[in-house]
Image 1 (cartoon, rainbow, N blue to C red):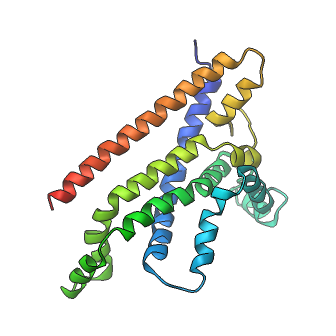
Image 2 (image 1 turned 45 degrees about the vertical axis):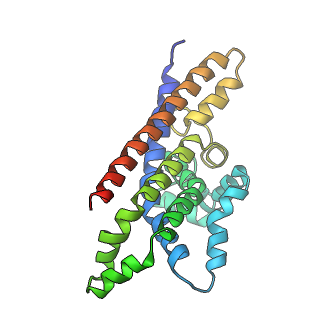
Length: 229
């Protein structure tokens, strides 16, 4: 079975979108996870609910809300279009959709890692006069690194597989917004397209396995580094 150019384009776009979504989401997810794990404030329950809302909403609903907020007829959408930063029906909109759909998974993994760190370790560093940022960088961050990696992998995987919110917000334009899941769906709508869809499914599985293998290798290196401290 051969792979046509459209499948390669869809794979490249999916990887591009997933990488951007993961990189952009990590800092915000880490900050939100830290707030939920270590801070008490009014509205914490509401923030937690909003973070996890994409998990319970149908993806199509999330995509529709994005279209209402950032569509070309919406005030924010028109503003972004005037600045050359349009999101609707553009690959950058697929990045936004992927970030929103994967964000709860990333926050959850990072929050669990932060909660597993004994606060006494940070307190001990503080008593030695270490600044707060130095404590986070030298004590907390190395200990939660496996959780950050896990969150990144989950966010990447979600971005690679995102379909409902993406197709609703940015449509399914070959070569522009057609990601691998959208391309698979399109192939299945064409009589005789099952073989091409099967090829793309294999491509998606290979990428997923490679991502998991890479994360495991990185996690082992981080664990070994921590053990050597």
